[in-house]
Amino acid sequence: RMAGAAEFCTIMVETMEMGLNALVAAAFHYCSCVTAREKQVFYGTQSKKDLSPWDFRQHHSIDSFGEHVVQIEKDASRLKRLEMVASMVMNNSPTSSHKVTPDSEKANNLRNLFLTESKDWRALAIRGAACLYRLRGILKSSEFAHPLSKENNRVCREALHIYAPLASRLGMHRLKNELENTAFQILYPRQFATVTSLLQQTRDSLAARRVTWNSRTSWKPDISESMEKILEQVQAEMTEILQNDAEFTEAVQDYTVTARVKEAYSTWKKMLRNQCDHILQVPDAIAFRIVLNAKKYYEDEPDEMIRARERALCYYAQELCLQRWAPALEDARFKDYIASPKANGYQSLHYTATTNWQGQVWSMEIQVRSGEMHNVAEFGVASHWDYKARGKETASTNMSQSAEGHSSVTINEHLGRVVIQQTSDAYLRSLQEYHWQTHGNSDEHGAEPANTIDQEHTPEETEYFNGNEESHIRAERIRARTQRLAPYIEAFTTAQSDLARENVYVFLSQDDDEQEGAVLALPSGAVILDVLRQVELPFLPENSVFHNGSPATLTTRLSNGDVLSIPSMMTTAMM
Image (cartoon, rainbow, N blue to C red):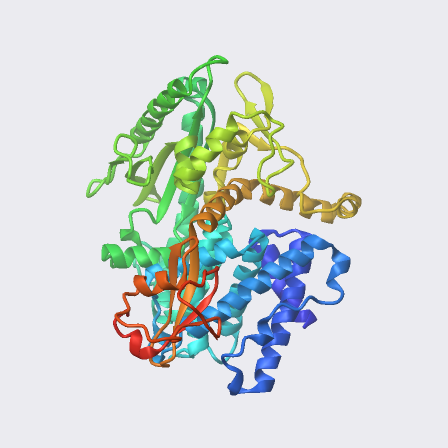
């Protein structure tokens, strides 16, 4: 168990740079899950629907690590039990065991249920790491064979459709990518091998890396290596072009240039969607993004004037790029989402450009947007307005618990001044590029985080970190991670509050083993009768509905995670 717990915690450090409290809670949670599995095996197949092994039991020694650790582990255990209920209810039928893509509505409802039931975001992070831990175990074991077992298939589906999107929502994009790519490798080994082999080809032959020239053997970089070199070269040149333009630098307060190469799973989905035969046909396999914030010219300058200037600067920055990187001849895919925003409020400028590298033409996508536009794109319209309102409050106003106590330093290179701003607006400008930083490099101008210690740490931990150079470096990385995640956690908390206030999510089970269950979203305050109306049941015998295993009246009020059982003869119409 110690070796397994250590490996589990290593995943959390590698993918999320989690702090000490979360790691201690994760170690206890790992041991609890192992104990529950052993109990299930011991009691045999008769207890498949018995969830008692997964009931929360507080470890006798966890109290010594503090109340926060106890609460994180308790929340993680609650989520694990919900996973087991979902597995029991929704994967009930033989036909559902090998469905790779579940109903999108069910997946969305299940994600929202997990989101509303996690009191601490670290509990979701622990369960996401647990999902990756199991995926890696499948890869290592002899069970990695096709057709996959029902359990292994469920773990992969859970990774792709539940925990990867949740990890993305939390800003943990490295965890998201690893969940998607590992599940992709297990579910679709042939397609994964194809994408990998395409990346290992060269542009010359698209078949082999080894070529012969003048009776000597030489090696050319494969497509993957070439893309990374292009990222480095174009990003540096794009940064230099913006930096050397006097009009641009005079008008902006800060800006970032970020770059990324599309991950294997995302590339494969894009190839399917666009019917591409090769990775090189995916227009945004290589992508660059410029995010800028306009300078405020005077103290009382209206926001509308600043926003208008930022829109003009976006077009100006795109024009600078167009002068250097010509649009693709076949399909430049110019998209002006600033003039014509998407229905969800998304705004940005896109176009497909070309660049020459080692005598070959490569396609890439260039995006330009303002910091406010990026806020909407990353965290949603609702969080943007909530954030904007609080940005007008004084610096003493408390932020969300996850971001409390941090400040952001904005550097105006041209005036040689350093201005410390302790508003969430300052946070966002300094943190907004975390999403792409995890995919590649980032050249950032004008925003640096202040030197603060992660709020997860106690004074004793801080003293330990300060006394040990290696530990201090790790503490700094955790602090940086906390600041990068701050706007994601803030948006996550807002969404969590809205969902909990407006909805209740319940499982609908059926007695017939041939029928697959469902997770339903209902208005807050709903009763059993509302469920029956939603699934349009034509007839209801007396005492036919069971609520969490007991007969219930139609006016029984529902809570998150409740399980309703209805005879199978009544559910044929609803599926």
